[in-house]
Image (tube, rainbow, N blue to C red; front, side, top):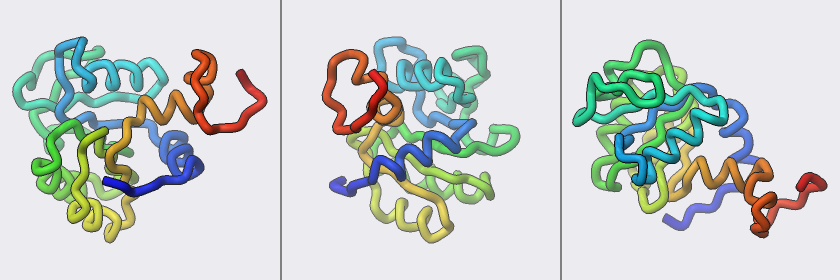
Amino acid sequence: MNETYSDEFLKTILRRTKRIAVVGVSMNPVRPSYYVARYLGLKGFEVVPVNPVHAGERLFGQRVHAGLDEIEGSVDMVDIFRRSEHVPPIVDEALERFTDLKTIWMQIGVSNPEAAERARARGVDVVMNRCPKIEYQRLFGELRMGGFATGVISSKL
């Protein structure tokens, strides 16, 4: 889980991403998967919720899907909120289902190097043990406005 990613690499991913399947999203507003998905939606990303326990319910104006195979159209990113041992079949399904998938993103505490290698072999970028919400806030100035040192030098506040 000690991979490093350049700020430019992460910015490129976040700038090009439009539609995100969030696998393991919770309906509980105090769970990280809920508020990360909500935040991404508020930032203009189209969030496609995926959780078999809540399939058919609505979250953020979208129908919750039981699995990636139920999603119509493609997604740019699959954001995984599942334990590391559950990652391989999710990645395999994503690679099979979305031929133009650009990114597999595994949340903080989630890492699976073997699944990551399979995705990279297909030309898909992989981020492990990071949160797109935190990275977005860090890289695009939102944390600086709160007084946090982000390590990103900018003339913007």
